[in-house]
Structures are given as structure tokens and as C-alpha cells.
Amino acid sequence: MPDRQRADARRNYARILAVAEEEVATHGAGASLEQIARVAGVGSATVRRHFPTRRALLEAVSHQRIESLCARANELAGEGDSRVALLSWLGDVVAYCVAARGLAAALSYEGAEPGSVHENTCSAMVEKAGDPLLRRAVRDGVVAEGVTVADLIALIVGIVLATEHHPDPAARAERLFRLAVAGLSPQVSAARRG
Picture (cartoon, rainbow, N blue to C red):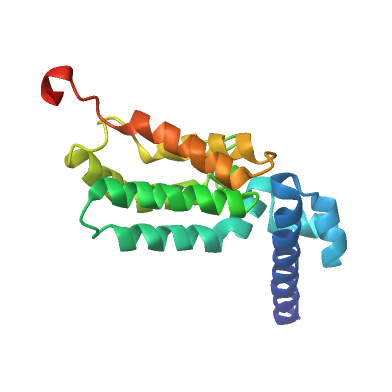
């Protein structure tokens, strides 16, 4: 009997996750947990047993995309120009967040309790992947010291959430990101310029 229960639990988890991916893609991070339960053919208690918080559900839905972003950071780590590599990766993060509704919310720290079992693993994975890119860019003097990956992710989350209802969210987010990038550059003094 326990094996059958585990098999049922695995099937429920997979079904809930598949439905949640569709609902989040359609309705964003605010997708109804009750609707997910209904479409998946399970009770809302079953959804909450597998995903005790909305954040846990969003992180599960976003996990594959997060892994892709981490792999992309690793690919870019060997690129010649550290600034280009970092900005290329950050541009990918922006594009993924715009395309994958709910991903920006999964990356935000809003509502995450420090030290909880349900810490923001999506952000932790992205921070770990982006850290070598950022450190190299800082070391090369092409990004200001003191900037952290958490700062950059917070900036991206803000841009994506602020543009999600724009008629062309991808173009608007890209524009705002490019404007923000100018603030990442170390200040060049007038004496050095010329």
C-alpha cells in the first residue's frame, strides 16, 4: 500500500505542476491555487501539501528555466569581454522573466522568511551562477565595486514587474534594463577622459 500511495503522490505532483505551469503562463504569479487544484483534479489540500506556499509553487514551475539561466552563465564565464558576458547573461534573465510569467515573482525576495525551509532557492541558484560573471567584471574594472548579483536581480525583477502590463513588455523591459545598465558602469573622471 505505501508504494501505491507514493506513486499516487508522484502522479499528483506531476499533474499539479503541469497545470500550474499553464495557469502561471496564462495568469502570472497570481494564478489561482483553487483553479490549479480543480483543473488537476485534486483537492486544494493536496496542492498545499505538495506546495505549502505560493512561492514554493512558483519556484517549482520556474526551476527548469532557472537551470537554463545557470547553464547560460556557465557558458558565458569563459567569454573574452567580462562586461559583454555579464550584460548578455543579465539580458537573458530579463528576457526569460518577461517571457515566463511568474519567474520574476519567483526571483523576488518578497515574502521570503530568512532561514526558512522555503527560502528563495531560485534566487540563490541565479546568484550563485551569476557571481563569477560579476566578480570578473568588477575585477576587470568594467562594473562598479559594491554591486551584487542580488542587486541586479532585484533591479530586473522591478523592471519586469513594472512592465508586465505594457503593450510590449519585452521591448519596454529591454529599454529600461539598458537605461539601468548605464548606472552599473564605474564613473570615469573628467581627467581620465581627456
